[in-house]
Structure formats: C-alpha cells, structure tokens
Length: 355
Image 1 (cartoon, rainbow, N blue to C red):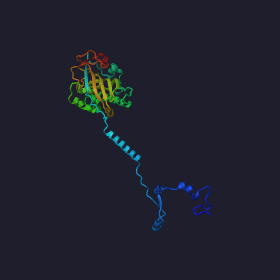
Image 2: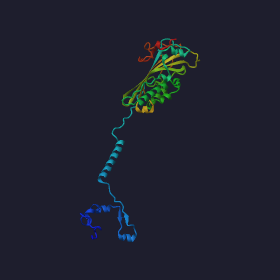
Image 3: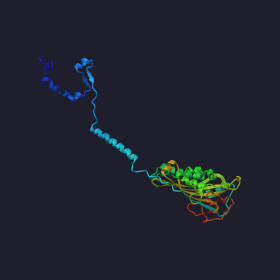
Image 4: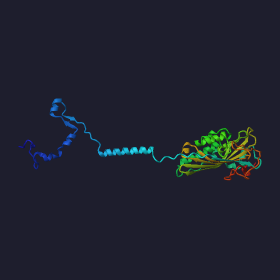
C-alpha cells in the first residue's frame, strides 16, 4: 500500500518520489502570490467575521516606467515649443505696402471743324468708327484667365472682374455720368486711396493727382445729357504678376457717348463724344479678398472739347454744330492706341461720324 502522499495506485513507473518533478511547473513564487487579486482568509478570520473564504485585494500601484516618463516629457516639450514658435516665430509676415497715389492725365481733344450732328443717334453710330462696338458692359470683354507663378486662376479672375466692375461704374453708370453719384466708384477702391479720392471731389485741382475726371467720366449736367443710354464700348483687359504679392491689370478702352444739350427735345441734334481711358490697377491679396482695387495710373483722352475749357472737374463737351480752335498735335485719334499728348490734342476727323 502506498504512503500518505502517494496516489492510490502507487507511484507511477518512472516518476520520482512525492511527485515533486511532475508539479514543479505549477509552483508559484512569493511575488506571484503577493500580486494575486484574490486572497484566502485565514481560518481564524473566517470564524470571527463569518466572511467569505476569499477577499479581493486592491490592485498593486505601479508607477510609470522610466521610459514612459521620458516619452511624456518629450511630448510636452515638443508641444510647448510648437506653441511658442507659433506665437513668436522669427519669420514675421511683411507689412503691406501702402498704395501709390493715383497719377492721372486728362487730355482734351479739340475738333478741327464743326462737330457733326444728327437727330438719329443710330445714324451717328453707324457712320462712325464705333459702328462695330458692343453696347455697355458687353464691350468690356474678359480675357482667358491664366494662373501665374504665385496667384491662382480664381485670384486672376477676381482681379479682372474687379477692374471690369470699376470700368462699368466709372464710365457707364448714368448716375455717375451726370455728375451726381460717386459712391459706386468709391467703394471699389482700396481704403488707403479714399483720402485722395475725396480730396479730388472736395477740392479739384489740375495737379495730376486730384482731378475727378481722372477717377471717372462725368459730364457737366448744365451743358450735356445722354441722348442714347446704349453707350458703345471696345477695349482690352490684361492681367500680369508684377511680384509674388502683386497682380496688375491694364485696361485700355474707348467709350463713345451720344449727347444732346441739357433740356433739349428728343428730336434735337445729337453728337458723339469719345473718351479713351487707359487705367492701371494693382491688387495685393487683401484687395483680392475685399474685391477692391488700387488705381495707380489713369490716362484719358476725351473730345470734342475746347482746349481752353478746364476738364478737371467735369467734361464740358462741344455739341453738334459747335467749333473750337484746334490745339496740340494735328489729328489725335482716340480710337488708336498710343499717341499720348501733353496738354491738348486735335480730334482726328476720322474719329468723327461722317454725316
């Protein structure tokens, strides 16, 4: 018969006494026992408290390992550095340069004879170089937009659209043409040009900086009125990048108006008045975002006008049948590009309707 520690059938063949080798793999050391979540109460504890046989031990508190602590510190330092560099980085955004004052030139063109006229404005247009011009804003055509090195297609389109809006408001709006309204033009300008704009209308001066007719087209309402609201227009718009922060748009257009004396009947003779405007607009990124423009150059030829008349504040057209002494170079044609004149020019006969 086997001993007290042996199995009933005795020790299996080949096994050592007491089965120590067989159960060695499941013997737990002291640290494992201490880490156990369940602990058996002692017999005395179970008798005294009538407690369950086991109790749950609180989990052992383990501190962060050294590697984890270092990782947390590195993340905190990196995050703090990122915030600091975002607030006090050494690469400050360059301050926007203030717009240049508008430089303007207004050249009167005097007729070489009596101003042609007719009661039928359609006849006047048909017999003039403006016969094939489009009407109103349709004559201000947009070129195919192309992105530049530093500006996207949409930004180039915004610059061209703003320039077109300025042309429409400053040369086609009836309220502006009659000499009353200025706000439709003013709101399209860069805010830093508004002082110069306002001074031009409050205190007009022929100094190349403060002439209302450099900003917009307007006739003296006491002398002339529109005989036909369908103004003829033709010209070009071109956009180009001047540097990484600036777009420039050049507008070169000829506007032809049919005018009658103020207060005259509809059957009174009308005449044509021609204005050629070459405008240079500049746009920084704030201008593009705000749909505003910096107008930096305005070159205007207008006629028929008398050279002796001051064209600073208003344009005072010579109307059908009127004459004026010619001045300046012979035969300045506002329909042709180039041909700048100094103070006054002569309106080419070819620029007048043949009636």
